[in-house]
Image 1 (cartoon, rainbow, N blue to C red):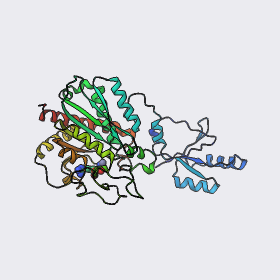
Image 2 (image 1 turned 180 degrees about the horizontal axis):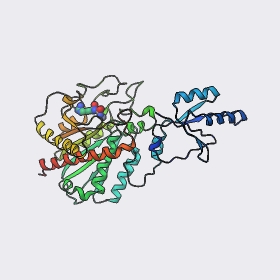
Image 3 (image 1 turned 30 degrees about the vertical axis):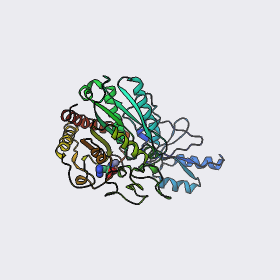
Length: 408
Ligand code: 0X9
Ligand code: ZN
């Protein structure tokens, strides 16, 4: 990893593109006064070629690379202290691409930008798009769904329900949900058949508190759970272990500090209650439930609480196969398919099992590809190809679902 050492006092930096600075850190060097001695020290720093990017107001500066450790030692030698002010300059700069009513696949978005995008779509496509504030997260963020129709005002169509961001750190999942939304709404002509007898409902961020928390700093980037305190010491439960179906019967931890803590009881997490209630509103109409996660290139179907397979495993397998084959044909990426327990591990109390039990005949967890140094963090430059590839799979699965489950 490389770092950007930015001396704030008296110096500034001109930045060109965000991805160039992914993983760079910004430090503020302590300057009590600009004495002659300190000026001399800064000049020393600027001459030293073991660090990168000390820029002055005209954009002139040293340019080399170093690690935080090397640089801290150097600062120590010349008696300057420092403070970390930004753990990932690239991330912040990504935010500086202004949101102007449309989303791109160039960066990840904040939860409020995502909600704003949904509202903007409803304004631009008032006959086709409807927003529902389904409920609030523990910290009070609105969890909004978007219902996408073809505008013919027919009610009681079948429903495909997609969600993303149950796990906070899996940013590629909300990004893929947003791409699905943008295609279905802004490019609707291409999806005529998929909107004829089907409405699509998307909840792009199930765990907005966690999602926002992961955007605070590199230290919080890998947070998985919700943000409701789980004990005096620890925070969060795993929302994908908190559903009221075989809750706590395997694959959950009873330690409130664990990443897979199932919660003090089923449905302890307000976000899980919101999703549970939503799923029930599609009773009889809901035909496919698809929850987007990362990572692993998997299309998983029930059950996740037992190694037994559902009676309708052939239907599940057929639809999943349509998805994996379409992706392979489009990009050569391989997806493995099978039941959660058999392909991955036992994990009871998850949303896919719940949706299947609640009446969705097709219910999948799609684990999108890994990326970035921690596998959960594909860089912004990888978003476009992953979400487009994912969409190919979703479209193929949706076609199969529409064919298998016509409107009655
Ligand atoms: O463990 C999970 O919740 C999912 N994997 S992840 O790496 N995204 O955390 C898989 C869930 C699969 N479904 C069930 N076990 N029911
Ligand atoms: Zn996940």
